[in-house]
Image 1 (cartoon, one colour):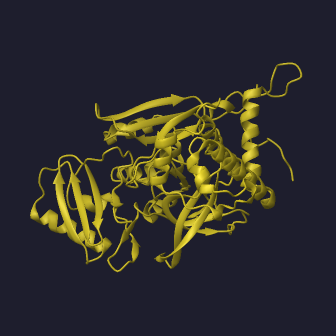
Image 2 (tube, one colour):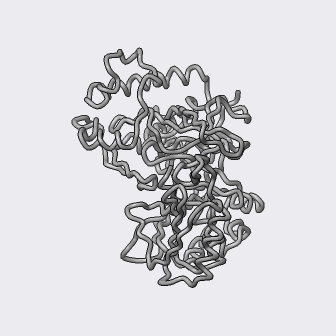
Image 3 (cartoon, one colour):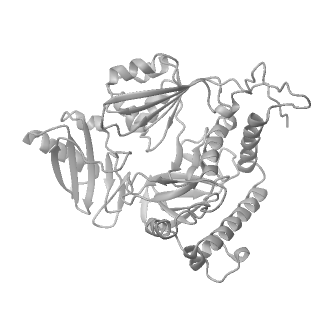
Length: 455
């Protein structure tokens, strides 16, 4: 098997000028880490699984030494004799309790740790601690995907992110000459533009996006859908978009098709605040995610009550192999999926498919059934004008719709909105439609258009 760098855009002065040195240490270390992760995730399966087993043992040993909470969960068993299936499922409430009573399990260590928190979109915000290594891993793993897929590193990268900016509306821009920065001395990469927005003027934002080639567009699917009310997919193509990388939400089949039809591939990631990258969508099999086995072990616990698209789904349990500050071991992340041993593309590693967020994309019926609920904002916009909207399932027969930016709605709008909701959810639901000046999103930055309080 040939191994060469002829297709990697090395800089003209990529190699070190120091005596007896090939490549300077910082870019060499970063590239070495990328190679390590690729070797783990694409190499010998037995070697990978033995490595994972040892990493779990290391994590359990650390947790037993540092935490009364984890010592109680592990009991009197020897660390080397514990299998993952021997441990109870870890809930969000239990994580919150461990963090509140014990703090970071890296306290007193030389490894820095910071406080993080989930957005609360699941209904239960989780505070936790994350080490500096976790942040470094995330950067390396996302960069590794570019090498694994042979993506053109010289193209630009445009990251668009929703933030709460209550003191002003619009968007802010930060530009970097390269991404990832540690490779800058070694490899020529495109520019990185980071845009943060909150209720932006679409025309001004689009003007900014066209100032230079977009390249890899990394953003929320609902943001793209809102843009498509004004900007056509072909316009994104003409502005230099070579790939859409959706984050923080499910990609609708319509959105995927609209971009694919103009030659813009869609490649989603599956991740979480607590764990970081969990899976990366296959290049050849859309909807199938190769698990980031260098970061996590995934289990799926079947649930006979949940079946979608002819597939029986189960709860996703995540064991984060590097979660030394706040351990996430057999953690119920709140999503559903099916788990396969390998991918039909030939990848010899675990894969997730049919991924659904239980509280994000699913609705529960009174007879116990669960079905997918996906309603695009532009469908609502054909009935009533609004700044924002939120749909919540508050009971097994109740749905509440909030239309933001409106003081009132006329009876025809209320009736038509309720009818549209029942069309997607089912005729058995009682639908309440409210006009509100501004939706109270609380601490959530995800601003989910639909959320189920029942699941």
